[in-house]
Length: 185
Image 1 (cartoon, rainbow, N blue to C red):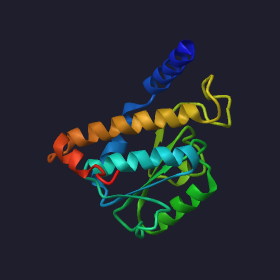
Image 2: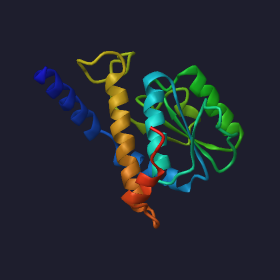
Image 3: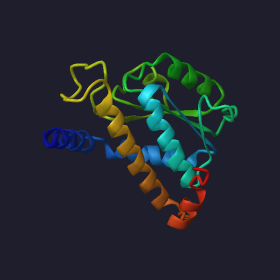
Image 4: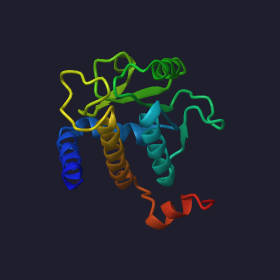
């Protein structure tokens, strides 16, 4: 067990060290400039997106998750964050296309910058991790399916939130963020 845990941690260190700082900074700037933020992803990537959206809300951002019943229409000035390891997930491509038609910007979190969704995005954050497709350029991993990508997405997006909040003039305090945390649990 200890060897497996250490191998997973080592894999994460390798992937995280290869995330481009300029892409992460661009992502942060787009978050700060957006009127509202919408997040989408399928499967485990969608769960990572929901975790990201929750933490953005704690940080005081106006954020929605695609597919929830209270999610409003996207419009100009808004930002869609699309999470797709392959960059070609059909439903996410449709959402990105509709967001662009509405005048919103699209940021893609992916392993494949040259993907179908990447080609219509306003920016891309590449997470150089393995997906369930195991393309030749993806790193080796002991982990099944897209575990490595999803774990790295969670860690990178959490780091981006921390840095983005630190860049704001009205940085929320720990107490303010705690006050926004759910209390019906």
